[in-house]
Length: 363
Image (cartoon, rainbow, N blue to C red; front, side, top):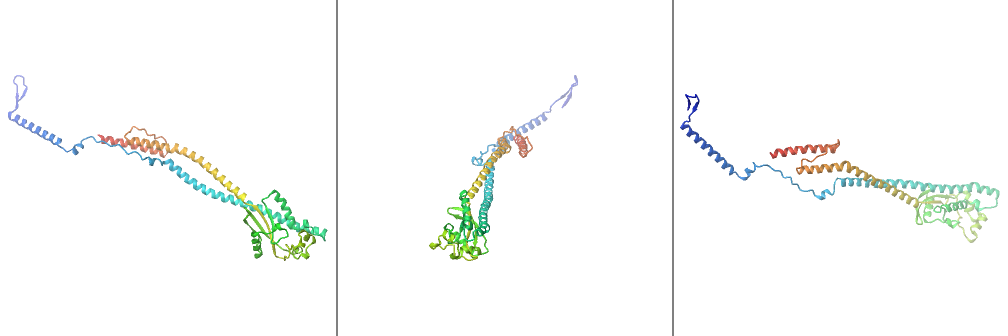
């Protein structure tokens, strides 16, 4: 109820007793309702109460396995280089060995052909120049030292052999006048080939002579008409020839030949073992030089790889470990424009994003 004072004209509010009782009842009901809510909140299960608590994040991670760290990026990189190097060395060895062997064979063949040409020219000069001149000057004489092409060629080769003892020359023949020219088993097999195949003009290749590998060239010696005076019947041979080779003691070697018959081979050989060994040494020297160059190259590549790639990656990995442990103040170096710098910038953005998410969850 409202009343106005007659003295001071103020308005006075007077509470109605009935209204006061209603207000007190309302306040009591509200208080009881609040008490009931408090009891309900206190009696909630633990799972419900945990939702109101501040959320936490577990940052404990299992440590890296040492066995996985032992075979790192550097080891894989070096392993790949070693595999490539091994394949390259094997390929280079066979290529170099094949090339050097071919070059050595060409050298040996060239030396053998040169020796053969020298002996052939000596025989031709004796038969075509010296022998006719001596016959003209001494028609009734046979001077072996100037008229026998085999003797002259052999004498000249003896001088060559004094300087090159590994070289070999021989008029290989079955039953020769000079025992030094007796054909061995291998030479006899080649003579039989020449006899069986008249179109075969030469044989060349490697053979084992004694204990050494040699490159050999053999050409057939075919009896011609001009050879018959000394190689047909002993009764037709010059007296000087019979005396020199002791025909009077029954030695008929070198006689009873016919025109067109293969009476022997002109044989030369040069050593191949020394050349092959030198080739092998050159090949090994080449491989060693390549291997040394590879080792130096690997050292330089490893230094550059460690400085330009491995160190930045390790630094970035350490930064990532720090961030994973909650140390968001870690500084990530984002300088540069290469791929590693781009990766560092991406990590830096990820760090900011993770920190924002964690801060949001922590509220």
